[in-house]
Length: 108
Image (cartoon, rainbow, N blue to C red; front, top):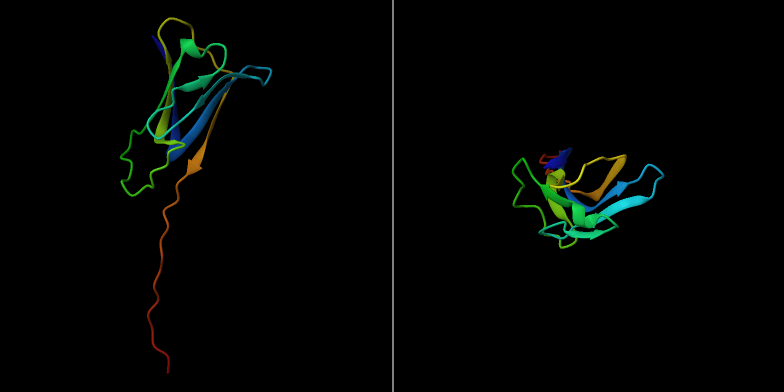
């Protein structure tokens, strides 16, 4: 079994992962939903599985989104074929925590 694990700097909502040939054409393109990234387009999709997961706790306060999967880790796995990569692009949404500030004071 072979795999390639990509660790992101924070939790993102991953929409799509594209694996490119050296000539810039897509080798495989996975599209994610809220629960998985199993939809794949490409000639060799049957050879590989892609998962998006989180090695850190994902906040319950993140909004549920149906068109992407939250995680900080992308893993491409196969059990019967060699694994190589020229370029892999991860497309997604960065969740930004919004804060509000309150100012107090008096004027004279």
